[in-house]
Image (tube, rainbow, N blue to C red; front, side, top):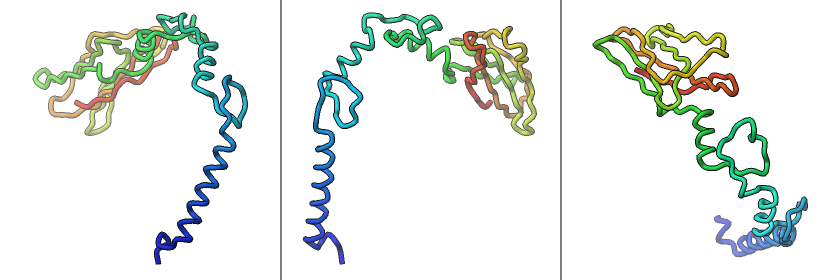
Length: 180
């Protein structure tokens, strides 16, 4: 026996739906024209827009995101500022180039956009690290855009890990893992 064939069951479901709908609308029907801390009213579009305008100075557009303005709650970053900040703090894995030269038995690793600071090359067959950049002390690290070049066995496969150095936070940022 299918419940949906029973007209009484359909009517009960419909009445429950009406009751839930009524309950929701009774508690959320008042639309306010200002932002406040009410939990039973909803703000109008105008209230939200006015609230943001009061909090954010749209005319004060910052061109860079740095320590001088990173905690400013009333400033709007430009698109260029956000892009530059993301580019310097989030890995750009697609920018990394790994070039394997089997005839010369080398692997070259470079990043023309941000540069690289540390690279580790691991031989896949035995898991032994073939090369690892010296990362001590952190204060002396510098990103290098030119290629790191490593000697390899022509027939072996390698995993390459790379990091960039963020001098503002003095941290290494994992950038990419590639295989060659």
